Amino acid sequence: MLAAASMGAVAFQKGLGAVHSVSHPVGAIYDTHHGMTNGVMLPYVLVFNRPAIEDRMAYLARVLDLPGRGFDATLDWLLSFRRQLFIPDTLAEIGVPEADVERLAEKAVRDPSTGGNPVSMTEADFRTLISAAIRGDLR
Image (cartoon, rainbow, N blue to C red; front, side, top):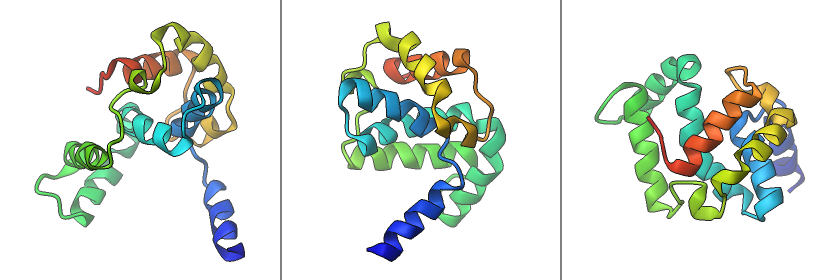
């Protein structure tokens, strides 16, 4: 257990990014499960970060031997996998109302995980991201 805990701590040194930046305040305010909230947020953050991660997503599509190639193939695979795990599609489905976008964005931009996101984020970016995740606007 000590070795596993140490490996987890080392992984955090890389930086967690916007998935966790949003999941932390959502979990604190709405008492959502952290892993579930991360699963809801992941595709929205990937789409937001697309300009910075497109090449890596294409590589991942090849590694996973997906029928398609590139970012879209990997995103489609992730969405399918998420459905198999019964992870909700939107933040609204786990109780997050659109009325709290401002409050969540303010907290997310100040979260220490934000610095690890591959694309710099402002409070306005978080408002856009969180609104998209509440409404289910992925593209």
